Image 1 (cartoon, chains in turn red, purple, blue):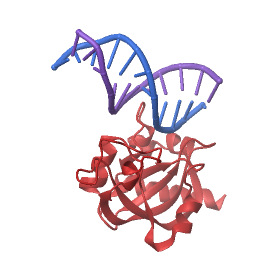
Image 2 (spheres, chains in turn yellow, cyan, brown; image 1 turned 180 degrees about the horizontal axis):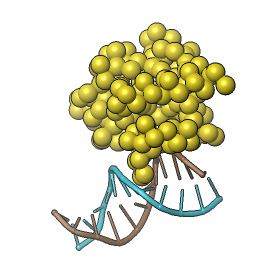
Image 3 (cartoon, protein in one colour; image 1 turned 30 degrees about the vertical axis):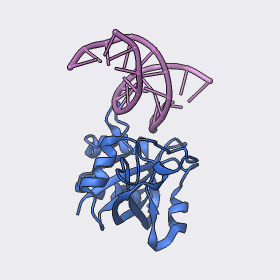
Image 4 (tube, helix red, strand yellow; image 1 turned 135 degrees about the vertical axis):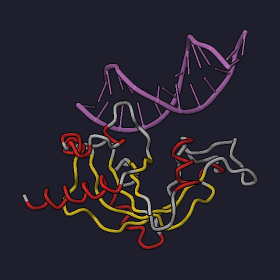
Length: 158
DNA sequence: GCCAACGTTGGC
DNA sequence: GCCAACGTTGGC
């Protein structure tokens, strides 16, 4: 089992939105970055655990743990001329973009803000805190994943 | 709202 | 294949 971090802007799709989608989960559509696509297409497997991260909000933070619940399939939004994610170069015969489906597992007992992650030297190597790094889907080392969960428990005690 | 960092596009 | 121009991400 691998571990991941997936970013979402809460104004667009929040942790609560994910919880509401229930067991069938949410297709992670709209990813238009090849590296992120390749992670979904080639490396993500059903059961992989995901840190659900809220970006572009104050403060940015990890909100919950999700899991991959369906393997990569074509991103239907790319075919939809009305969608902001429309890509005319992607066709049903030859889909350029794919998405996995993700469902909520559990909210963290306390959210873990980005600045706390930055200050934790055990997380110094996380891609999330690497300068200039802005992948919306990124692999997470298991130790880093567990450390985030530990921080959430610790923050909940205060 | 600003802007650094990065990815993509397209002319050549 | 190079690279300038442009668009996007996302923290601040």
